[in-house]
Amino acid sequence: MIDKKSKNTDLSKIRAEVVDLKKTLMNFKFQKSTGQLEKTSEIKKTRLKIARLKTNITKILGEQNA
Image (tube, rainbow, N blue to C red; front, side, top):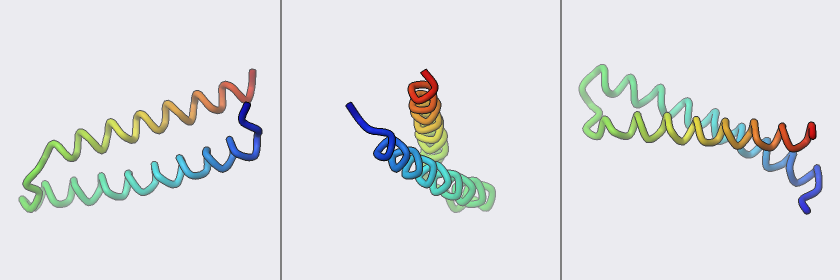
């Protein structure tokens, strides 16, 4: 069983990754608007990664409250 400290560190790592992905997403949107982004599918992939990480955060918090 994973103890609370490791869950908290995992949670902070996940949150930091979400912040990084949001910055990346913003850059992709700027690149798309200026016509510099060649792979527009990267925007969708990044949004899905953010959603998955947020789901994991909710799952971890739900287990802590149970």
